[in-house]
Image 1 (cartoon, rainbow, N blue to C red):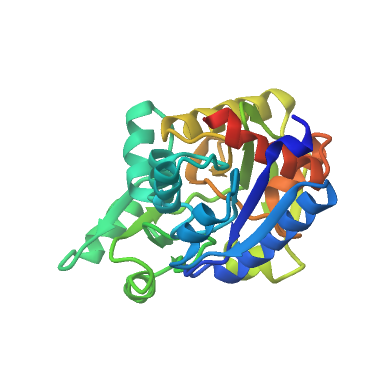
Image 2: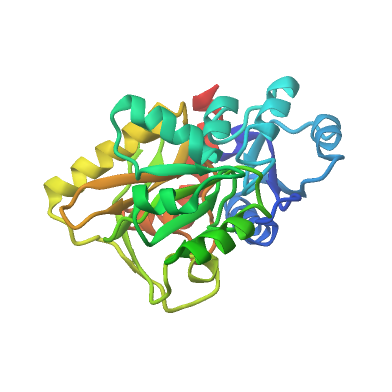
Length: 306
């Protein structure tokens, strides 16, 4: 597609979610890349007036760089469907399911895709029974949040209780998840192409918000170091996990690898980060695409999805 054929493009960023600051950084990087390629792109910090602005502004396409709520939960996608404006990434259903760790697990389990065992934490639950089932340590996670916000690693029942209270600040649904002691891997998806795997190494307890966006000590290994046939198998599993949730366009699937080499799907990110710390640009580079080329390829998914 020629650059001029994209028409007037809105780059949606910011918004009200807990991931606002990262979204602004990602959005400005995408906006700059589009402008470098002579795309008529305009940055919009999403708020209540955004839909009227999109409709009145004569926009032809929307590049969604809203992380977290509004952007990854199907809300903005549904609104853009009503306005009949093509947009990047997954549709309403894929976005909503990708944002929901609990429903993702329901579907993956039904599809035979390995995912760590979990327990829904509800008032009155016996945390001792939870640890008897899952062991210690466990991860405690808000069901609908991104960027590792609200996630804690609990090594005792007392820590699990505190972790539950932390997670509940982000969502009223919280799960405890079995700890998989092994390597962390991520696989970017671009259209029907699974990008090279990245192995993530951090000196922190786990790959948390600081390790993702602030610290420069996190190590990203691409090539990931796995044998080629094993990498291809996990890439195929990533595509299956992505497709099982009805996701499309582009995204990222995160995994943990246990000591036996079994990969467990953790979550799908339907609007991954596009900052200098972000993983999809790193994988795209390994596949031969620079940042500007990647951004243009993602923009093209707005038309492919339609």
